[in-house]
Image 1 (cartoon, rainbow, N blue to C red):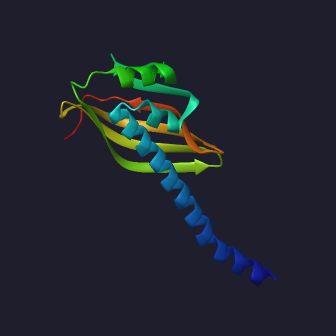
Image 2 (cartoon, rainbow, N blue to C red):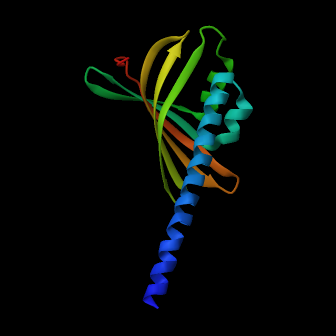
Image 3 (cartoon, rainbow, N blue to C red):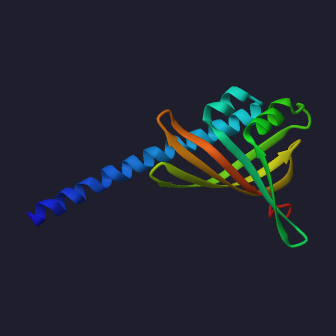
Length: 151
């Protein structure tokens, strides 16, 4: 009986792993949709992937002390959709590291932010998502902003 249980467990490991990878792809798609909406200034795309209580936080250093700035979701969306077309903004994302625990997911992703195709700053986005019946929703993004980018 112990051998049968062990065999069943061994056979289920790939199924569990495949399910986890499928969830990670869904989460990555939500993050990509968010940034597509950000770049297109599209409030419908943004709100389709945001939890109602969404907040954006930015961290930086000033005189060797960490500073935290935050903005609520509606103010963030208003700022994005009302920004002028010039100068242009582009955020390039790299190396998604996705962790999932039940209804909570975190995406740690490095980025570079360009204004008019010139590197302005870089850092990391820590994106928190909640699994709802309708799918994964972003409820918080906290980013670091570094001006000393090694390129």
